[in-house]
Image (spheres, helix red, strand yellow):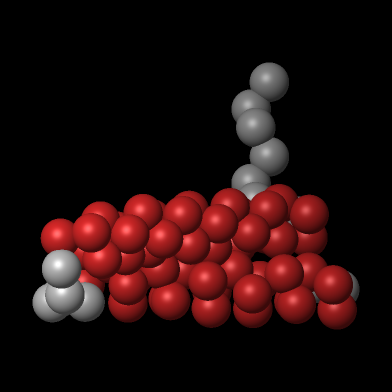
Length: 66
């Protein structure tokens, strides 16, 4: 993996972890709960995308059968 791929992988893992942390937090008003859920899902999705993309660019993903 190149340096850029490692940075993207690190950012993806951090974003995914923060997203999961926001999803499991409790408390607050109803509006803040919904806002936290939306932000948590968006960060978790971004983290998963960056992680998968970093592995794909590095050639770590298995090739498709033709």
